[in-house]
Amino acid sequence: KKIFAFSIRKDEEPYVKEWAESHPDVEVEYTSELLTPATAKKAKGADGVVVYQQLDYTADTLQALADEGITKMSLRNVGVDNIDMAKAKELGFEITNVPVYSPNAIAEHAAIQTARILRQTKVLDEKIANGDLRWAPTIGREVRDQTVGVIGTGHIGRVYMQIMEGFGAKVIAYDPFENPELKKQGYYVDSLDDLYAQADVISLHVPATKENFHMINRDSIAKMKDNVVIVNCSRGALVDTDAVIAGLDSGKIFGFVMDTYEDEVGIFNEDWRGKEFPDKRLKDLIDRSNVLVTPHTAFYTTHAVRNMVIKAFDNNCKLINGKEADTPVKVG
Ligand code: NAD
Ligand code: COI
Image 1 (cartoon, rainbow, N blue to C red):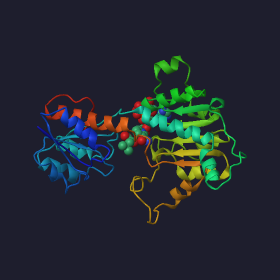
Image 2: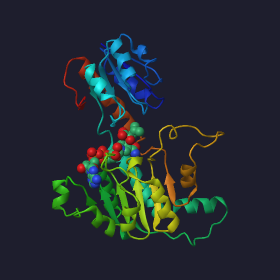
Image 3: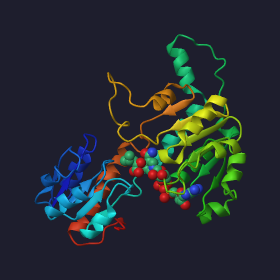
Image 4: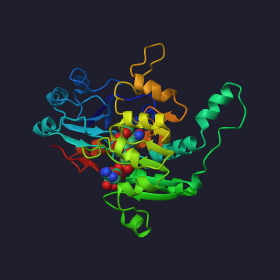
């Protein structure tokens, strides 16, 4: 049996090799190239493919794989929104993803950035770099003095809650599907409006569904406390960026953490040095002292990347051997 993997980065290579060494019965080949209609033929002779990319898995791409007799595809990430599912169904594809590879990676990043905003570390770093070593006016807010409102208490939200509690914060949460254990412990407020009214820090840990599009907007921001901190390490589409900029300009929002941005595709994980930066609004946010931008790197840890690779290969190995995969995706 043979598995072919696309778009393997340098940091993933050791884990691909680790998996291949522990599965000598499976032939493993890979490329750094993305999966496209043109590159699909590189997988010729393979029984399945392991993939990750933000580029769409179009009907043409899926057809090109099927033309090579390959219909078993394992994603190394969570999101399946860039797959032409109708075509995948028509071609009889079996697909898997890795829904949980390290909630701690994302939760930890969100918590670190929350603490940095509260202690104004970016302002301090800029002052120090310019030779201004005075304390004032860069006075911090202690995490234990904050009420932290967590929207979405799934895998990542729950770890973020634990970390913030470790710092001593009062944690409240909202989720339409309440976790029984958290409910018993009294974390939930009745509505998003209640959370907006009480929270000093608001952190988003929900998926980008149609219903959640721009859930943080002018109206929701108006319901928040003055000097609120907003943290988005989930999906760019959850936040109306212009509304946040207005909140930052008026002083309503104390600080904004953004690991995801609604127009990030084609901009994040690219090298813009020596080139014209393609998005004025994003540049404006990057330049602000009370905005922490990271290019969708919350997930990017050795622990997470290893799990993404190993779990995707495990899934694909099961598929190509006619076994039930650990985390199959509904096709269609
Ligand atoms: P999960 O499915 O375990 O939990 C999501 C929770 O959100 C669920 O409990 C759901 O009921 C709740 N929810 C949905 N809509 C809601 C709403 N309107 N209000 C309140 N709660 C709502 O997901 P997860 O693994 O914890 O992931 C959370 C988010 O993190 C997702 O958007 C995911 O795409 C994102 N993510 C980001 C990175 C990164 O690198 N920045 C990496 C992985 C995942
Ligand atoms: C996800 O797994 O959904 C992420 O957001 C991380 C991805 C960029 C690899």
